[in-house]
Amino acid sequence: VSHHPATDQFVVETEFFVRYVESDGMRVVNHANYISWFEEARSAYARELGAGYDEMERNGFYMAVIEVNAQYHRPARYGDRVRVRCWVEESRSRTVQFRYEVLNAQTKELLTTGTTKHICVNSEGRVTSIPERWQVMLAGRQGELVNIPA
Amino acid sequence: VSHHPATDQFVVETEFFVRYVESDGMRVVNHANYISWFEEARSAYARELGAGYDEMERNGFYMAVIEVNAQYHRPARYGDRVRVRCWVEESRSRTVQFRYEVLNAQTKELLTTGTTKHICVNSEGRVTSIPERWQVMLAGRQGELVNIPA
Amino acid sequence: VSHHPATDQFVVETEFFVRYVESDGMRVVNHANYISWFEEARSAYARELGAGYDEMERNGFYMAVIEVNAQYHRPARYGDRVRVRCWVEESRSRTVQFRYEVLNAQTKELLTTGTTKHICVNSEGRVTSIPERWQVMLAGRQGELVNIPA
Amino acid sequence: VSHHPATDQFVVETEFFVRYVESDGMRVVNHANYISWFEEARSAYARELGAGYDEMERNGFYMAVIEVNAQYHRPARYGDRVRVRCWVEESRSRTVQFRYEVLNAQTKELLTTGTTKHICVNSEGRVTSIPERWQVMLAGRQGELVNIPA
Image 1 (cartoon, each protein chain N blue to C red):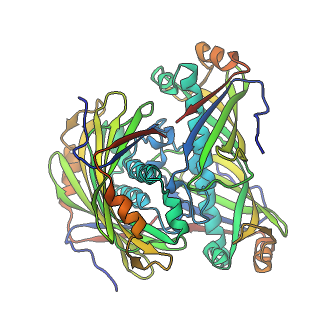
Image 2 (cartoon, rainbow over the protein chains, first blue to last red):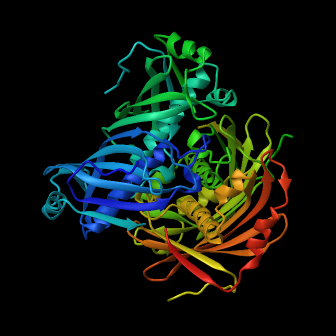
Image 3 (cartoon, chains in turn green, brown, cyan, purple):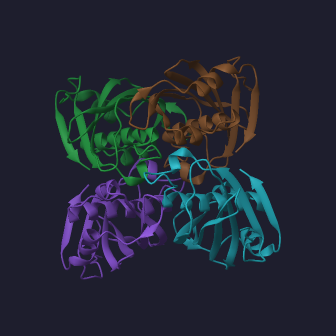
């Protein structure tokens, strides 16, 4: 049941154990937490590009989320180690869309897929172009896969 | 800028203040928390039907989330009181889809919209029909709006 | 089993339903969430004083948490409505300590007790005196109890 | 400013990056999240003992939190990598107390310290003795330190 991401883009993978607090009354990970895992995968992606998102904010630019989609195929449970894959699906001067896959790191089963769409806003909250250094980085890399344990 | 839900379905509204912990480094509510607000709106909806979701689980049925979509129009901030509207968009024997609107309760501005899709699973994790009592409740009511402070 | 707060201070109560996401794999509210409920109770306290904490931050002052204690007596569960009581236990020019009680709003059983201690920091992160207007408000009121649904 | 844990007990360290969602309106990690980090450190501790806490629950035993204490010395921020140290401070047949230290993994500065106290309950919610296999494991190891990236 192994699974390869359906992309030739640069893919960053991050891995971690499910936290106990992330499970809910159904004894599976609550669906909202996958959205936070997507966010953490974006953070790992930015760190891997060599330019942490914290640096972007220090420069006065913020990537605001304007859309989220997620499909839940199989549950993750406390005790599981999960792997989150993240890549850029579409990159423009003012928007960027990421795609995600969450897998069980042991069984390689696909648990959740999703996308997030972002715009760039400045410190006054105005929509603005993504800084060029970031546009280049988001658009530039292809065909590699990097796996980083959290 | 007042806003009316685009439906003739039975709508349940719940209201609460943004919690401090729900804001993030951008000083706005983190996008994942709206997904939890949707969930809380479903809870309010079930309570309003007179059959809390906790009762459903005690009977051995669980409404698992299989899809989430959200569009973020304007940010909510700590200090804001928000109103979450929830109604059934599509109800079948095995699936139900809810739609949501999050508004600023003071200004009535529309902040976030979204949907969630659910299947019914039993205590062994098998997909099953939604219990009839619930199917009837989810399908049955139209044209009313109930506003309940949390 | 009714319970009265052990204080003659001004007490603010806030009430809400347990959110599904707040329960964990034990099917009870995860202990970390009570700390967020304490925080929400402080927010309700400040709103009741007529000076929301958001206003304090807009003026460049932040109440940083330096200590948290909590004792867990009985669990809260999804489906429960809880009441959180909050009052000032000790108020000085540079520190303030709040005390909390979480009750089941139906049965009045005491679920959790705790305290938080805070210092005031300015926008540069320096420890500073609590603004006088707030010192007076925190120290000034006694013997009243206000109950506000969330 | 390096720091060594004040214990000769078996210490388990886990490391991870601060997640964006964990920061709040003060642009530092919200104090409630450290309580979840303590919990994750206990999970790492149990995994390191060779007996994940999920196994304990599958056997019908639950370690319920009855007390939490935390002292906040310096803030963690998004972009920081943190290290959480965890060890058993006191182990009895019916209770166990863990102690924690959260450090900035780069600077080694001590950020937060704390303790949690636990009792063992069975699947009916009754207080019971900690299973012997676990009592032995919790009491048995000394003087080692294991560092595991999350």
